Image (cartoon, rainbow, N blue to C red; front, side):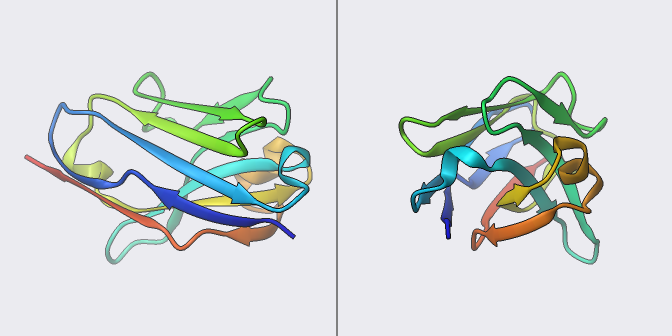
Length: 126
């Protein structure tokens, strides 16, 4: 099993940047696709971005395309989410998840999500 811990959240002004990290422990990290989801207050959990086990493929929610970049370093067992040009509507708790199944199923929310982190708060002020 893989355990995930997010970090890097915080308070930032609109237009600013943050880089989230998802650090994994366990032997199978490099075999999983990894997704970043977020949950804003009073809203459902939404996909933000996902990356394949090799790092060769990635997909993004339309709302973050061109602003966010997902990457991974399997040697360091870490996935990153670089967030630029942040907007107040990006305010949410961000979670990373390890998933089995095709990358498209991670984006669709239908993958077998084998592990979730505890989340990290991102707050973007106007």
